[in-house]
Length: 504
Image (tube, rainbow, N blue to C red; front, side):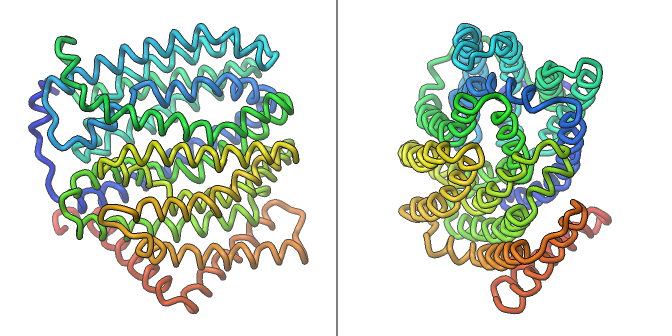
């Protein structure tokens, strides 16, 4: 494959963004299911090879590294996706600024490693942080390549990169875990995953940056990214305070259980939403001058994601503890109880997780920064209150505040300006709300009356309640019935196109 110049990359035209986004989402959703299977397999096997203390140590080390990973590109790669008129020297500048910032953050992480170890009173954390700093540097080398693939709605290489990273991490993590029974299996898995991602990105996009001669040309992108970085910092704080408090106040065992519950939340929430999140910003950015197309695309998106994650979240509320026992093993009882409370947050993912992409696509990054501050106060404050009730209390406070407080405020914020309205979002969310309430309420009622002991029987009963709830929602609610029919038709059309591409 011939190497392409920066100008060649930028001159590639993108047409029919909405249709390409919908097709890309469906394709990546199928690919993400395969990747999710790898993640579940990794959790199931390594959860039996390692202990809660092992996961707790890595989770404590990650408390800083997750933040540095969020901020390592200073929001510049997102600016590359959103910016309507990007010049060659700006793209070159973005690559080098990303690399310099990543080097700076890696140095900060290395200097902070002894302090983190003392904060948690765990000397073993220090070398873990050093290793994770290397992983941060490796993945930053490919961030600009990934941004350009997203900008041009070329999502297939991104999914191959994710799957390669997951498979490589699985092989190394399980192998090292079986051999050493040590937390270094988790760390090695992270390092290998970062390397695999970077290799795939550089092969998929044969572009190499020019010399760092015009760094000032990226000033406009830096201003955009600054607001996004502040939001990322605040969002990290609101999402991770519970894990930090659990480790600091309740010890490594509780932190390990909380970490595994959060991992299950990630697999069933952000991991499944990943294909949609990757397509939403570039598609909405290309539709920012087409208000009708913008509204139609986003409302249809919220309707479908709200229905899917409403059903999934209700299932977790009813039987999340059975899922944890099946995947992680019988020693993770507390993680299962936490995961049940996280079911409410899973539903919230389907309704409001794209608020950042909406505001960024409209250039409303100042509002995004202000929302990050408010959200941090809501969810982090709830986690702080929940710590009084223990680790499960933190999970409960996080789940309730995310669904009951955060989602309505997000709908209001998005509808204040631009082509979307709060009423339109609530109308789109109606099928998901109906299904979530029916399935969760009926499931909790059944649990209070009778609940089998066997994990398989619990999952089977919960699945039956989910199917019954969806069927009842279709009978009682016309909007749900219409959405289910249209979704079935869209999936059938997609399958036909995949089977007969020449007739599409």
